[in-house]
Amino acid sequence: MAEPSGDGRQYLPTGDTCFVCGACNEGGLHARFYTYGDGRVHVDFNPAEHFTGYTGVVHGGIIATLLDEILGWAISLQSDCFTVTAELTIRYLKSLPSERPYHVESWVAENKGRYWIAEGEVHDVDGVVYARGRGKYFPLSTEETRKVADCLTYLPGDLPAFRGAE
Image 1: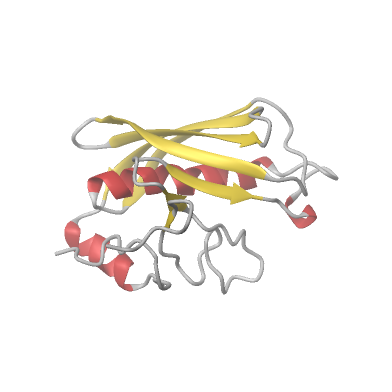
Image 2: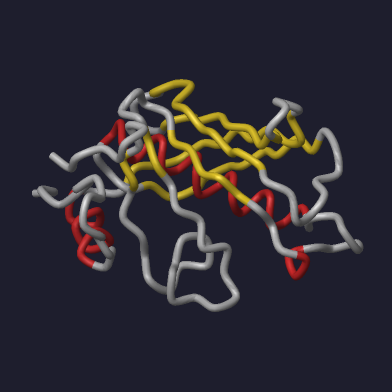
């Protein structure tokens, strides 16, 4: 088991070219997801100006992409399988200004057997919620999960999620 960081964070592996978490994707979000082992997934997000639609306002598609990824991670950690998105609903509550720090958090809401449902939200350092997401996800097979896991990058100390997928 990976050792948590000093504050208890356990970082998740990344996909080098992934738009959301890929360190090698120059135009990507470079999100670094983590968990405290409580079933929730977190990411700290400080959107740059080039992720805006209107000047100074983060594009809704960027918010949806980030929520989609983090919702899927919450389910993947609990189900031990990667997932594919079947349905995603985003509720935009306020315009999200760029170049400010935000926290995004997700959790599993329901296991329906054939599919899972997760929820999450984007809020600022004062706890003001800007967007909420809810999605339905279908788990991949063990073989498909293994193929995805084989393409991930695990940095020293990362949670070894899916490394033992059989």
